[in-house]
Amino acid sequence: MRIRSLGVIDDAVVELSPGFTAVTGETGAGKTMVVTSLGLLLGGRADPALVRIGSPSAVVEGRISVPPGAAAAVRAEEAGAELDEGALLISRTISAGGRSRAHLGGRSVPVGVLAELADELVAVHGQTDQQGLLKPARQRGALDRYAGDAVAVPLAKYGDAYRRLRAVTAQLEELTTRARERAQEADLLRFGLAEIEAVEPRAGEDAELAAEAERLGHSEALASAAALAHGALAGDPEDPEALDATTLVAGAQRALDTVRAHDPALAALADRMGEISILLADVATELAGYADNLDADPRRLAAVEERRAALTALTRKYGTDVAAVLAWAEEGAARLTELDGDDDRIGGLTAERDALRAELSGLAQALTDARTEAAARFADAVTAELASLAMPHARVSFDIRQTEDPEGVEVGGRTVAYGPAGVDEVELLLAPHPGAPPRPIAKGASGGELSRVMLAVEVVFAGTDPVPTYLFDEVDAGVGGKAAVEIGRRLAKLAKSAQVVVVTHLPQVAAFADRQLLVEKTNDGSVTRSGVTVLEGEDRVRELSRMLAGQEDSETARAHAEELLATARADA
Image (tube, rainbow, N blue to C red):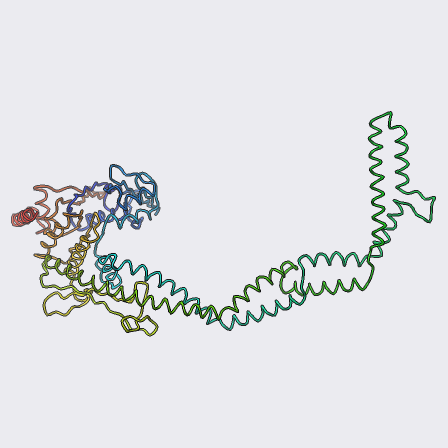
């Protein structure tokens, strides 16, 4: 990794060993920034407060080896990233203003993509992770992870049935608690549909009746106008001498016909005049028929107005026009059918709910059985690891229990509470020495014991669900003496199958590392800078001496440091 302008680190390159790397240094030197940097590369939260004062931004760049075809490589390629000789190049930039950018394999990607890769690449553990291990839900998750498919398969089926049961139960509650409201709604729908059915409106009928009412209301004026127009076009039978349009046009056409042979233009006008004559005759005929067919019966007008009033009564209640009223009726009929079928739906949903509860009972029992079997193996494996961590008499076990609940599901002849992960409450117990009763690790483990339990759990996981890199941030806090030596030895053993990075204050742990990195800061009077250096030979002895006695040049501390290194080399 290369780290620039992050916290106290101005510009540093961190080269990690493929095996066991120990990161050491004085308190406040910036060791935790190494952990923070890796967290940022893997999608961690970007806090602008991490940006070095006076710098516009902080940048972390890393090169992580990823085997071709691995899940992380596939996900990275899906995001458009390119692998560089089997490695992923990742960078993260945080501006002092709070904005964050991420790049993966040369492509800009959402930070969430980096977080998706994290689970496949690195297991990070620190003091906060130890506190998380105290929570029963996390302990159940750890047990399920260890059990693998034996729990994962029934848990997936249980989850599907659980979600369906929640949905069915919600529908049943909605149907039963709103029964009165739904009955009232059904009565209103029946009344409205009956009212519309009694009138029997037709689509477009309101517009047709409006036009007919307008015509009937002005029938005398319409008849008089039609008669006058007809007389102007076809002549008045009572006044043979009166001129009319038809006669005048016919005379004009005859005048043009007499000379049309002498000029084509005039012949064309004569033809058009003939067309006008035909059109006038047609209009005159229709005007004569219009007057004859005009219905001036006042009883028809009264019937039309009565029908319009009935339609208006419907449009006031159910829509802006008849089309809207008909649409309301169609939707209302469908809704009424749904409401009338509630009793059948309640019966069907009740049967489905009971079947789902029975299915959940069987799956919950399968989960309990699988967890119980895995818990015994897990506890034995962690107990064996604790023996290698200077806790030879400690015993780890699991308490798998259920809580009685009359509203729950039946498992093993009891009705117990259930949730999205089953019916089991899982708690990790520790008996630190013979004769001590098993107690929850939150109450039965000291800080140093908890650190070792955490490490033992991770070592067990390494054998069943390995990740390429393990990062421990002062997970050895509260431990000293022989226990610290055993932790260092165990971490070195874990490093034979995975990359291990440990931020530590303990020389007993650091001595077992394949590579020791020193994080140190210097003060030039104005700006604090931090550098990361690889310690070898005499420099490593001096740093271990400082960690042992606080005195780099103490002969006693140097002898002890050299003895620690010799012990570690002998175990390698």
